[in-house]
Structure formats: structure tokens, C-alpha cells
Length: 556
Image 1: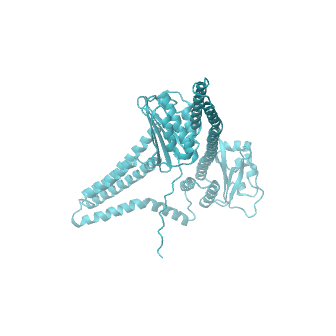
Image 2: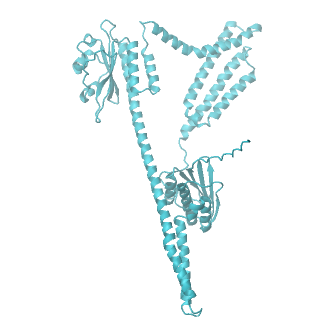
Image 3: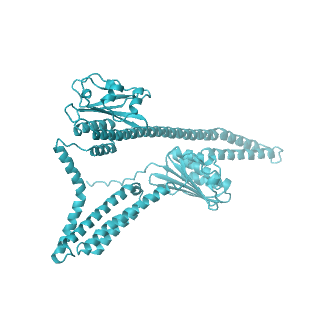
């Protein structure tokens, strides 16, 4: 198992490679920087309030800063923390800003006093520090909530486009379904922008052709009229070349969208397409009553920004749906492949057992009968000087050698010992037949499902054959251990080893990978020149039930 079939290019096993080194270093650096910012954010206010004569003792501040820095260093070794390193750094930066604000407040307090606080004035420092922390934490959320409440109370003041877009982005980020997202957007625009009606046209593609039809009207009329025809490819191409359009443009290019009795006839309509990559993904039509304020430049800019964000969200959702469909297809394909491999391996094992049984019950029995007949003929000769005695003895030896060879062949195809006694005894018997020195340590493995035992046995047999071929004279150790819900199989030799990257692939390891992969396992090979070779396989095994303690007889 040294300079032999190396790790093939197929699936079912892994090679040791460094992947994403730069990304990992950047994440660790971000976490370390977060810890340093957090420690500095603790130390800075402590120093300032200490100079003023208040706050905790210096060693308390140092201990808290040390804990924060230690947490940042420890997070560098956590995979979950590395994945969230950007968010952690942002949070640490916000904490640093909060620390700067508190320090500034304390310095302002110093300016108010005009000197270092003395006597009873020092008692004001700690309450002032706590008040500054509370104000710094609550100022942002309370300010935003107060502004929203004020706008909601004043009918004449509407929410700004930036706030509408922020809410829209927040809903989109939460994974709100597209239909609900569009309805919430339409209702919000109508309420906050004082609109008479909002229409949204979205994709109604059929048979691979993209068409846009009206999917949403807010508010829905009590007696809806006939539904307008969807926009065809030529109309979509025209829409894709425009930005925010008014009723004049609609009269010229899309007259069927302008209702005869609607406010558009009086100039109170705007249309904006949500375009991404030259493709129209949606349309938004907004209308106002005739006596309302006319649409201005600010309204058109806000509408253009809304459709721009909408186009990004719709494109991302389409890509996400395509990705999910691809992943589902890959999962189905992988499940089919797994089932196919399992069937192939099960069929091969069944055929092995059939061949072994046929050899044992057929050819081997015939040879045994032939040997018995030869012995009877030999015993019936007149004496040892009979000229046929030597010939019969030679035939008897040949038949017995054939019986032994046939028995070894049958055991190699599928050993009855594996079926009757399990992995440990079968591997020890195989080790005795190997030309190498083989040590088998099966521990407390016990019996496993039949397919698992067969897969592990023949993988180990293949490894021993490779070792005998490529590392003659080596010592091989076969170890079996159950670790949690997995069986760990390790075959190690002390042969000359080899470089897997420089040796062409072979079929031996692919066969092993296929066997273990059929039952959900993996195989990993590591080797280096002069350091031997190690083959490690892992397969899932069913959890063992803990034996229940006997129930004591109840005294009567």
C-alpha cells in the first residue's frame, strides 16, 4: 500500500489541501481587531473617568479589557465566529464609537467644572457615566421611532423615500415571499406618498417566453373591469429603454395602459420599469387624484430608486430560486447515484456469496468424492508393490491440493467466517494468509450490518494486497474502532511510501471508495516518501442500544 494506486480523481475520498487560506486569515484578523477595539473601548472611558477621580479601580478596568481581548483571540479559533467576522467587526466598531461618545461627554463634563472634580463633586461622576451610556445606546432607536411616530400623526407629512426603501430592503432581507413583498410595497407607497392607486406588473412567463401582466392593484376596485392584455416582447423592449414615464409617453407607446376615466387623462400618472441587465422584471404605475399635488422631480427620483431596488430584489430571488432548484436536482442525482452504488455493491456481494456456495457445494464436493474414491481404490490394491500404487498416491495428492486451492479461492470470494464470526475473526484469518506481518486490532467492534462488514473486509483485503505488492517486507497494522456513530478503519504500513501527487491513479482505491461510498462512507489516503502509507476509512454505523438494568423483583 505504498507506491501503489494513489488517490483517484473520483468522488468518495478526500485529499489534504489548504482551501481559503486568505479568507481564513482575513477573518482571524477581523476577530483580533474586534477584540482590540473592544478592549480599547473599555480602557478609554476607564482612563478618562479615572483621571476625573471616579469609576472603578484601574485593575477592574484592565481585567475587563483583558477578558474582551481574550474573547476576541479565542473567537479566532471558532469556525462560526470566523464566518460572522464581518458582523463582529461592525459591532465592535459601533462599540468603539459609543466609547468615543462617552469619553467626549466626560471631557465636556470636565469643561463644565473647569477643573478636576473635588470632594462631593466626584460622587457625580459615576451617575454621569451611567447616564451617558444609556443616552448613547438609546439615542439612535428612540430618535428613529419618534420621527416615525410624528410622521404618522401628521397627515400632511409623508415618510421619506429613504425610509420607505429601508423598510423595503429589510422585508426583502427577511425572505418575505415575492407576492407579499410586492403587496406590502404597494400599500406602503399608496399610504406614504398619498397615491390614489398603485399597480404592479410582474412576470407571467409561459413556455420560456417572458411577458408582463398586471398582478396587483391597490386598492382593488369593487367592480374590476376587464384585465389589460400582458405586454409582449416588443412592448417590453420599448419599456426597457425608458426611465420614469408620464401619461404623454404612455399615450404614444402603451395607450392601452391609460384608462379612459382614470386620473392619467389629467396628467396624474407615472410609470417606472424595474430593469436589470436589459430585462424588464416588473412595472410600477402610480396614480394621484386630480386635486392632489402634481408629481414632482423628487417623486420621480424616489420612484426610480424604488424600481431600481425592486429589480435587484427580483433578480436575486430568481437567482436564488434557480440555485435552490439546482441544489434540489443535485440532491436527487446524488441520492440516485448513492442508491445505484448501493445496488451494485449489494448485487456484487450476493453474487460473491452465490459463487462461494456453488464452489463449496458443487466442485469442492465432487473433488472430495474423487479423493475418497481414489483412497478406496488405493486401499483395494494387492500391496504396496503394486505398480499402480504410486500413480494413485500422486493423483490423491493432486486432488487434495486442488481441494485446498479451491477452498482458498472460495474464501477469497466470500469467506464463510465473515458471515459466521464477523469482521475481527475474518480479518485475522486473512492476516495469516498474507505474506506480510499483519497485526489486527478489532477492539470492541462486535457485529455490524452485513453490507458494512463486507465493505470493510474487502477494502482491508485490497489494502493488504496492495501492501504485499508495493511494500514487500513491511509490517501492516489494521485497526477497527467505533467512534460515536462511525466505524473508523485504519490500515497503516511502514513501507517506503510515495507521493500521491506524482503517481498516476489506479483502480484499487477507486474500488475501495466505491465500496465505502455505497454505504455512505469515505476513504482518505496519506503517504510520503520514506514515511509509509496510511489508509483511513469511515462508515456510519447504527447506534448501539444500552443494555437495560434488570428490574428487581418487587417484595410481596
